[in-house]
Length: 171
Image 1: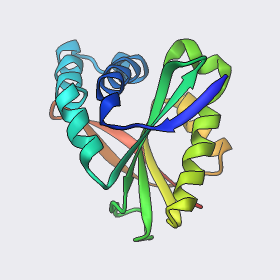
Image 2: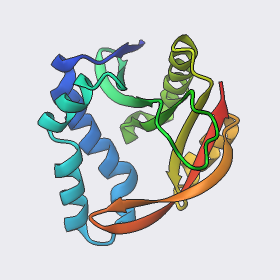
Image 3: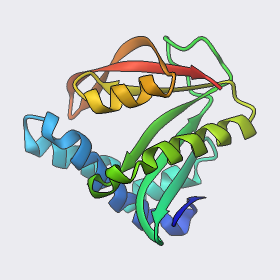
Image 4: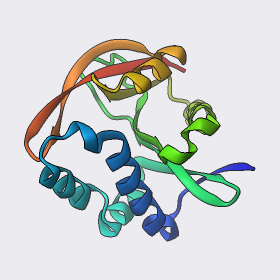
C-alpha cells in the first residue's frame, strides 16, 4: 500500500537518510570526484540541515511510503524565483526522489500527482524544477507529465557546474 504524508520535524532523520541515499543513487555517478559527492551529501543532507529546512515555512517535504517503509520524498520551495519562470505565484519542486529499488513500482508518478495537488491547494499557478542534462530518464518523465523546457542553469556541486534544464508547468 502506498501512503504519502507531509513530513514534520520528527521525520528529519528519515528525510536526511532518504536524501543522502536517493541523491547518491540518482546523481552520484555523474560526479567525477567522489570526494565532491561526499562533501555535497554532508553539506545538504545532514539531520541538522534537514531540521532547519523543515522549520522554514517556505519549504514543504512529503514522504512516500510503500507498505509503511519510507521509499522517497519530495521537497517544495514556495514562491522562489528563477529567471526562466515568469510567474511570481510559483513553487520549485527542488527534489523528488525514489529509492532505486522502488522506481519500478511507478510510485514517482503518484508522488508527482500528489505534489501537483498540493500546489493547487496552495493556490500557486506554476511548478518548476531542474534536471541534469544527462539524466535522460528524468527528462522523459517530466516531458511525459507535460513540463516544458523553459531554459537552463548551472547546478553547483562543490564549486563545479553541471548544466541543468529548467522545466515549468502551469498548474
